[in-house]
Image 1 (cartoon, rainbow, N blue to C red):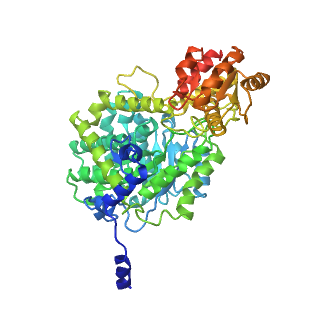
Image 2 (image 1 turned 180 degrees about the vertical axis):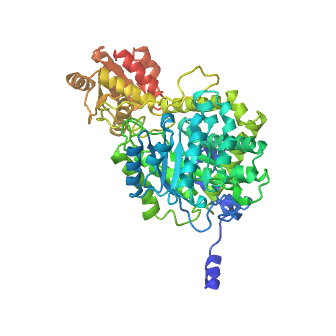
Image 3 (image 1 turned 60 degrees about the vertical axis):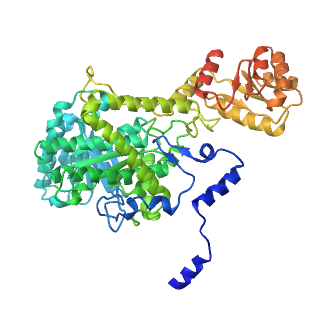
Length: 616
């Protein structure tokens, strides 16, 4: 059989890379290869349109084995299982316990309890965990950082009182004072001393982690993939250095750190991110000379992004979170939370939480994502992305180290400045539609109304209000600007935009569709048309329809013939807009026409300007 295969393959001549490039250049018909086909990523490197075996032969990642150092191919040797996690706000112990027991019968095997500081007590924990077999699932806890040590002592006392085998307790307690510095600007440095206390409390629990790196917060604030990765590594190294300096053995310190990372919409890049993260973290931990390579394993809980979720057309959030969940699952994470689709505008209800659970369960039980180790391995493209992300993230790591480490950089506001700058740029790109948000700045639902939906604000922290000594990261969803504009329009006055389609059939239809999508982003009522014989007929029809805006849609050549007569006939009875940027634009402006919509427009600013002109 092998001889037959060998003979079969020898019948085909393998083209060289140069032959492929020559063929592509012919097909491009003179167009620039780099401009047309090479993707310059936000992560700082180029992605080629194709890859070949020779591109990855020089890389080390394909040589790695699953479950072995440097764990680029995952922490497991024979499966890709992960914990299906759901978070519960546990302000009432009995209600939270009831909910936990219910969802544990519906496929969940990991629970995250968020406990208010005032509820941290032995009685509360006993009620919260009543009937839950703590050695059969993963348990995660979060409370005010000032009360985390108290919660840890209560938990360990509860586990011991119940007689649980410490080897079988799997989970974590969320202790990350640095996150508060980044996201709130609070000075939580005095709490860093609690890190060693927590490690000591859980030192006999090999699978329970008590120090968190919550880089998910950076993802939620709009960080690029490589920024989250680079800062997460430096963040983790800060805690590792802190613990080892305090005398904690490197093996124990590393085994107590857990990464909570976000997952954005860039499917293959996110898949590669987790592979690169394990690779680099293993190398970092190795420098502390642990006795066992197992200490170099990176444990990651992945949460699908909130940054790209939308209030309008919210069911599209299901598409976003599903592809994000696929990226994380295929990348070999430890556990995952799928963010419910309605989280931007309300407290998730039973329906949205069930859908979020089932999104993971479908991947695990029906698509069998949990059975194949590192499916991306060997893909020339994914191996290339893994290597490039690792290199770029390592540059960020070194830059932070040169600043004195992650804590020092956070105190100086360096990290906050970078993330805020990225967030600002991404909002600007969304305003210009350089970054698409389906259903919001591109292809909005023309007839959808907010129906009272209001974006959920950030929750207040239990530590109270105080003057902040450090800079903070501003976390605003990417769609928020458009949503605010659309809701304002809806609550004030919804203008009618009428498409005056005339002339060349293909061009008028294309421009009418473009203009409808453009104006509907602000919630305008749009009326499209099949076409008019004269501009006078079109203007009369627009006024009869009660149009506040008349958009003339035709070809560039025909605007010289139709635009000015239409503008003059309208005579200020409605706003006049030309769809496109024709060569005769200056002549049209000279005639008094001042409104144009085209692909180079800043959509958000243009719509705000139109609202102002319409008195909205």
